[in-house]
Image (cartoon, rainbow, N blue to C red; front, side, top):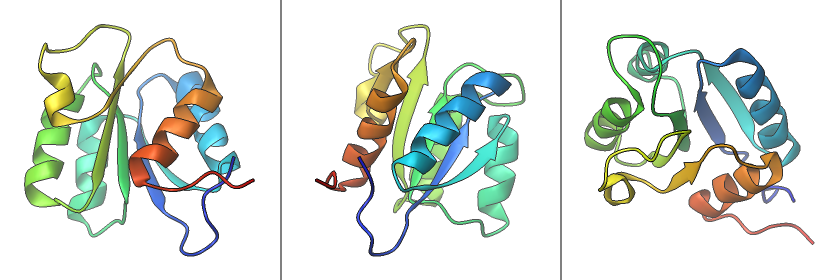
Length: 127
């Protein structure tokens, strides 16, 4: 599965677990996406505020720092409405989480996570 070959979308991947972030970043790159990695929501927010590009914010919900993934997603939705959102967690998250963004429960298969990212971006899988 790969992103379409027009403009390569950027995914801002926010995950505090280094191994999970590295494996997921590789799966997303394998799907044809450009990946910018952030270790927490504060780092991701700073990147966006500095003019960093992203078509999709793919964020864990629970992480250290001044805000969690839900707060980050809310800020991004308000300040950068063109960025699509995808949230993940090992916990169910708030009851109304899917009103804010699609939700992917951990643990997940890397190929399923990459497919969900492509789907959220509205990209077709290559044959």
